[in-house]
Image 1 (spheres, each protein chain N blue to C red):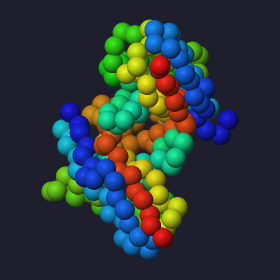
Image 2: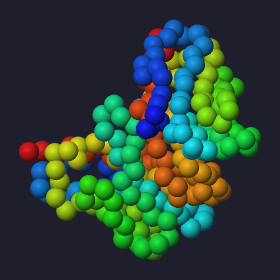
Image 3: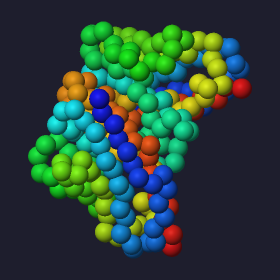
Image 4: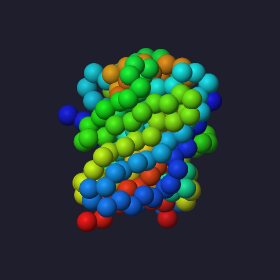
Amino acid sequence: GAGVSQSPSNKVTEKGKDVELRCDPISGHTALYWYRQSLGQGLEFLIYFQGNSAPDKSGLPSDRFSAERTGGSVSTLTIQRTQQEDSAVYLCASSLGPDRGVKLFFGSGTQLSVL
Amino acid sequence: AQSVTQLGSHVSVSEGALVLLRCNYSSSVPPYLFWYVQYPNQGLQLLLKYTSAATLVKGINGFEAEFKKSETSFHLTKPSAHMSDAAEYFCAVSGEAAGNKLTFGGGTRVLVKP
């Protein structure tokens, strides 16, 4: 596709359930990022993938959060045993490479609501 | 470590008036700075960026920003606001290492009054 695609666009789940959020980056983009956007917290970096290198997981808030990227393309962010404080918009972005200053292309996000 | 402060979480301007959004940063390395805009229910779009070239950077939709090292600022301006400029604006600074992890400011929501 022409842009970064995220699915689902909205997800409502019950506290304690696991959820999976998907990101399809722009074809050819080697770098992929996950951010979380929540009221009062702004935009927080979660995790970064670059090519076949080990991901930078330094922004993951707890061990309930994990992500993988298969074949250097599609990425899945998994939240286990969801909590109400996990409610937020989860944004995925991709870029041509890892260089400082490179433009990030963002998807429209997944709005996660934990009841 | 990097940080970004945006003064004013909400700004209201009249159509045709100057738009000024303030951004101050902290960085332990020469910074790369960005302004992104987010329209309702959309992802972020890059407006402009500073990457150590010209200090006055021109972006899309008539926006520009000036990098002032002495003031650690990167304020965003537009001479004449348009109704379509109503959105949320985020200032960001790039991380120290390769990977371009961005640290974002808290965002400024712009309301344009007719």
